[in-house]
Amino acid sequence: MIFRISRPACFSSLAALACIAWSSSVLAMPVEVHNRIATPVIADKKIALTLDACSGKFDAELLDFLIRKRIPATIFVTKKWLDKNPAGVTIIKAHLDLFDVEDHGEKHIPAIIGPGRKVYGLVGEPDIASLQREVTEGAKAITSAMGTTPQWYRGASAKYDPQAMDEIKRMGYKIAGFSLNADQGATLRKQAIINQFKRLQAGDVIIAHMNKPASDSAEGLAVALAETLKQGFVFVRLDQVELQRVDMQKLQTARRSLALTN
Ligand SMILES: [Zn+2]
Image 1 (cartoon, rainbow, N blue to C red):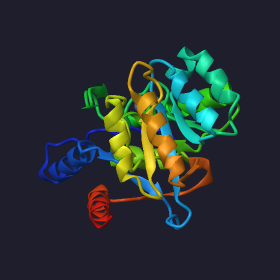
Image 2: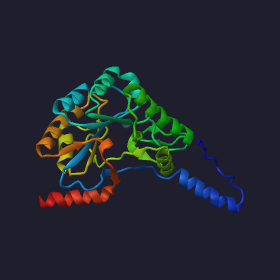
Image 3: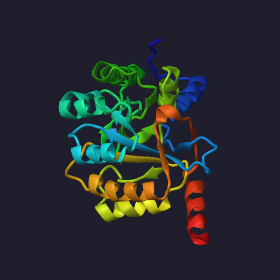
Image 4: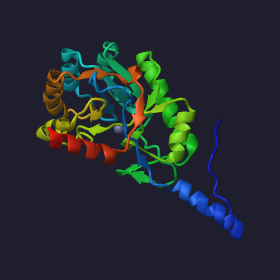
C-alpha cells in the first residue's frame, strides 16, 4: 500500500490541533537505533561485526583480512555501491558462507521524511513512497547481484523518523542498529579505532565501513579484530541472531563501571 502524508488545513481552531499534531509527527527528531544481540550472550561471548558499503569504493584490504581470518560479517550495501564495485561484488559473492549481505538502500538516502530535511548533510526523503522505493530497490539489487534476500535494513546515517521506522518494519524488514561505533564513518585514525574496541563487551553490534580504502579502517580493524579473536569473542552474522534495542546512555554507564572494576 502506498500512502502519502498530506498537511491538514490549519484555518479553524479544531484543525489547528490536527495541524500541531501533524507538525510534531513530521518534524520529530530522527532517532539513532542502538541494538545489542538479544540475550543470552554473556557466556558465549557473541559479537556481530557490521560493515556499511554506502557509496564510494571497495576496501579490498579489509575484506581480504576477514577472509584470511575467517571472520563472519554482515555487510550493508546500497544499489549505488553494488553498481560501482563489480570486483567487490565478486569477492563477497564467492564468500557468502562468511558474509551476510543486507539492505542499506538504493541511493543512500536517510530514512527521514519531509522536504528539505537533512541528517549529517544527507538529504532525506520527500515522502513515504520514496522511502519505500529506497528500501525495495536496495533489496532487489542485492537479490540480483548475490542471489540472496535481505531481511535487515539500515538506513543511511543510521537515524530514522518514527514513521519511517514503522514503514520499514511494515514492509517486513528488521532495523539494524549498533552498539559500538568502531570508525565513526571511516573518519577515525588507526589508534582511535583500536581504542574503541577496548570497550567491547559480549553482545555488541559493531559498525564500521568498507567503502573508503583510503581511510585507516582496514588497518585499525585488522589490529582490533585480531585482538578480539585472541580474547575468545565469537563473531556471528545478523541472519543468525535477533537483536534487542538498548539505551545507549545506560550502556555507556555500564561500560564505564565495568572498566573501573577491571
Ligand atoms: Zn551508509
